[in-house]
Length: 577
Image 1: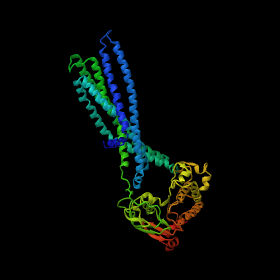
Image 2: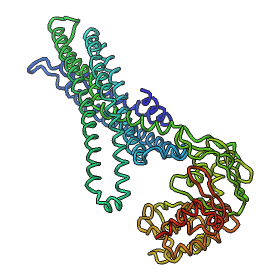
Image 3: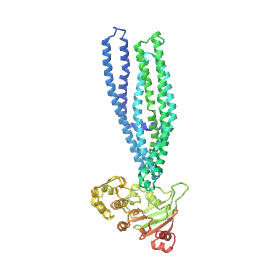
């Protein structure tokens, strides 16, 4: 019920179309209910062989034809209005989910399989839209039909009308019991769909590895296992949902039969007042119309339950907590580049502290390399510096200002980042290079590409800088993608740099050239370089050696080699034969 109310709140801005649908439903149903009256009048003027008032019958037929035309027009308008409400609600909901991805802490994104998040914004939101459209159509026409038929039946014979009213709620009770039974299955079905989406995304996105390790059969077996689970849960959900319609139809047909018997007795013996044959025919039609909305709602119960289950998954994202607001924080436009970590503590999981009482002072313009074994906290420091994650204790300062007091966008604009995982989007090379600095001129972009040694291969592309690249640059080599990412940062011209294994996918000759370009770029800028290949950071002003979240050694390359400590062993291990 909560999810249904939340969905309805999304429909409020589209009240004009809802009111339009209500008006259309009222007109359509009113003419629908008028037809049985006309049919009853026609029956009552058919007194026997040769005793038929043809003029009246002809008049009735014309009126029925007009009613049918009016019904068709207004049902179409009602469907259009419902479709607009559904489509706009889905648009708004999907927009809120996507915007939420940009406002929740990065830890929330990292803690969910990305395929599942994609499934929520696409499959689940679509399911909500389909269910909403059905509810609007069935609910509006159903309410008007129930009220209208009740009024007409009471006007014909109050006692027989009460028989229908008393018996019909049995179908509602049956539908409610079945709906409660299958709600859990529909929830599980939507969750499994998200799980399969995540599995497919992982498998398709890593097909090279799947084939390289001859994992095709095992990946198919894994998919088949999940697919079978979805099949069984889906079958159970659909079966339970499909029970509602025949069960309620059975109850409603029993109501129709009882109404027919009582009505026939009334015609023959005035059992419950006077009733003509035409009025009985009209009454039976109304009895059928009265129970029809209950049948229609239960007929789409499966879709409605799916929509409610999907809505629950969607609202989990929409209602998740945002990052703390930074509207009142400082908007820093520039920085000298003095960075200090003071007694920083951080853990990804409570109770398992990764960084413990970490302190570091970096002067402006210094190049700091961070090295150490996997999992020691190198990339975590970068995440904390950029406020992708918030520190648990202590603070990080830039030019004496706590980064927690800065606006996030302002803080991140001070840094240019090149990560180990290159990321490009579908578009032209020029659009990708301009991503970090939309105001950069073509000349500035080309100059940045030349500095990163990307210009030569770009010129060889079919359309040069206007060449379209596919999603994540899959039509480029890994080295070419990384060069474009480096050029993108060079075009940004930031006051500080973060390089996280930025040259890991580039051949040795190109790496030498790029290192020269980086030295130009880093001149006068504070730079943090996370490196695994220690040969790339020999000229750093300071090398921090981390282990288990602590700095265990620091100094220049020559100083650390001279100490013959952990760095000495780490460095020599990379060149051991």
